[in-house]
Image (cartoon, rainbow over the protein chains, first blue to last red):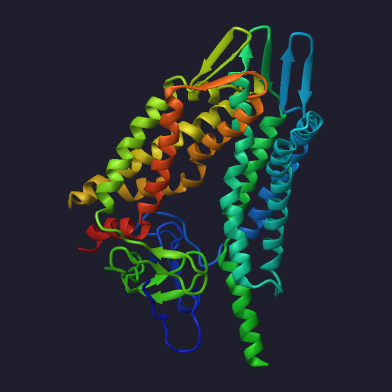
Length: 219
Length: 212
């Protein structure tokens, strides 16, 4: 591992903002802070995105709103010879419990209920935490942010499972599976949550810490 | 020349895009890594011969995506009735009414975005590896490729298959078509490709003609 030296030798680690510089978040080129568009890759730059939190809350709200019909409407519609069964996400998990497949039920509940709700809470917590001094360290919040960003895409797995089931299980009159309208809302909820995580400017996490450390030093 | 019109980048510094810490740039040797010492983000990870390996992997990935998309993927049979589907058919399963949107999105996420990313990275990397000046709009191409990264979900689809198989296996017999194995191999190649690619090195190569 290569250890890089601090850009200025005085005091602690210095932010690019305090040196009058801005870093392109797409290609990492460093520019004077008067530059608004990266000269190398053309990405828009700002020292701190002033609308970051606003967009995070808007996307998060959309994700939450879409998550409600995703749970109320059926995700899968199974037609067998004699009956038609419509299952919501939780209803599907309950029927797996009734059949005795606790493992599958647990997987469904964790992947489709626990993780989405945890993501909503985590992003909300991060957005609130950067507006005030937080008791959770910046390192832990950075880790939380990276976990949320990493896990976000994996929630699309539910949609892919519905797609595979409903294209594969088409056995004429015997049994046929069709996707329900909830799959659309669930996909939208996942996409909006991903956009909320992407809208979050993680540099804000470190600003608040730098400010509170500075305040402690002055005291 | 008016300097306010053309700002000069600071090539002696590197700034962590995650936490904004500024460091004096020290280029690691091949195989070493430069890590932001405040937040732990990996900044530079050059590898020897990475370019050629990535190009080879990218070509393999493009071929596999095209093949895996059209060949039979999974086959199900129960009570004398069989049905087999390809990846594209699975993606286009949401066919009625408003769900058509979801069909297009799924097809994009598991076939078109991964394919686009591979083709863009070939377009960007081939001239760099051959020591030629970068292709036209190479920076923009690489930027689009990077923006698509979270949205290309081939590997998630494969795990989705495993989950779907667990759900179906009580109901009917499921067997794997040739495309299933191709898609599984594809996922491994995508992951290896991601770890080989040092984004800082690519961007650095792309900025050379502007500097000279």
